[in-house]
Image (cartoon, rainbow, N blue to C red; front, side, top):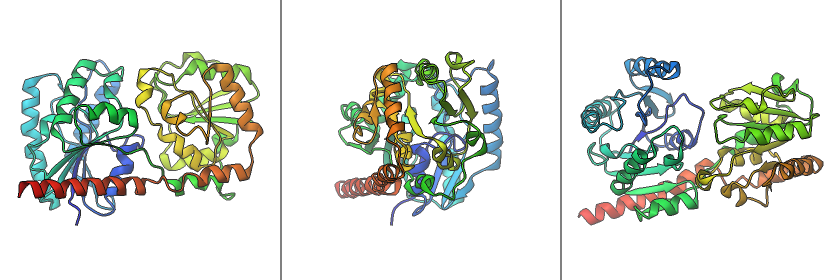
Length: 388
């Protein structure tokens, strides 16, 4: 029988990412304790957003572990938010050990595996009593503009040296981590195919805010941060003023490039379970990411979701999207992006949508997690054999 899992992850309430999909799938067959994010940076007391986050975490800590679905329990630990301070890290190690020990008693967790989706958790690996430690690497953290690069590189290297296995979401990321930890495996993103294939259901209603926009509708969803090429989106909007450009997501970047464009619509943040209905209302899905060093290590979740919904996809040359070039169009200039969208719209048909969706039927999260679990179980057996 598979062991319970204690996992360091992002915050549960945030937009679903691979953290959510992987741990939710694991919780179908075992107990999973999800620990909301530990500080990857020092908060700014001048930031209303950071202060709000501190207040929320205090309230969540007071509530204790919450059973959110299946056997998945979510808890917010309290630590000193000073990741660069050796003293704070020492204190945090003691706090976390005591906290997790108490949580394990409360939830009946004896032996367990430690999984982490965060790069700054090396201090806890090997100190909590876990049978085995796994790092599920979902991005090249050192390239995020809001994190200190040198600190992040050093913290992640310590983690890579201590865990038993690493799973990375694309080949380039796996190659980079394998240089430190040879037990590194590729685990591409999966998709909730059944959920997004609902976009093909004639009975599914398109949400009213999207349905109110004139077609054709070009859609994008995801956090609107600095990796989204808003200048490219503005170019598309100006080149095709009859199109509606629908952008779904929390605005956390500079969107001045699209401000004032009457056919660009910011529809706000939506729940993940609402996205298939929005996909139904899109005539094409786009991935307008800026191509920089970080894009080598990115694997957009939305690619497989768009395709499962049957959407034609147009993307800038993100390497992981290029690997699926037979199912989408790649454009490396603004004019080429517009032309690719023209072609995608011209070839739209129910049959083409169905074929794109069918191509994703074997790329589910359940299949991805089953493959990871088989590898982890084999590593655990080998580790036990070596001890004996």
